[in-house]
Image (cartoon, rainbow, N blue to C red; front, side, top):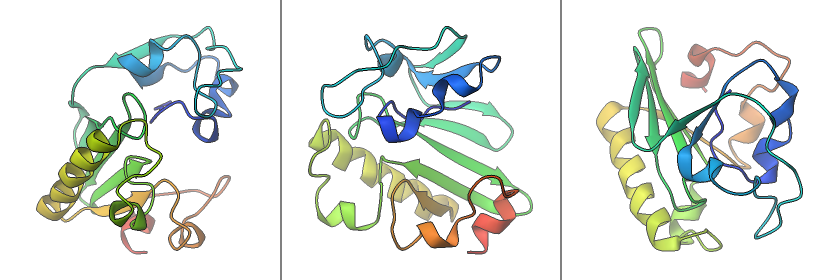
Length: 159
């Protein structure tokens, strides 16, 4: 399981996959507990294997984990490329919705870092031709499939 960051709206099922390693940024896992909202931390870390990232890392053909702090201490984004779809950039909450750029990432853990990494993500998307999938885009959300539907990158790229 890849954990983009530890806000409650992204970790609700964290312990539902007990035999699966959790891929997470090292600084996020170093928190005493996952972040609920602002400073609240009511749930414990599951007793599982964790794979920590401290820098951008290619974890396989066409699959790159990007460290993009700002929204959260060590937010992760994913750049995925396949021959069938081209590139897809899963920004999670590093850019939660396109309007957030104009709003200058108000409410982020570190607004300056959030702005810096949003510029980087936009440049990556432009350079690779990636389709962006945002963490909370009200316009995009209805076009995305939700579990238990089967999802492929081909469907994302053509929406």
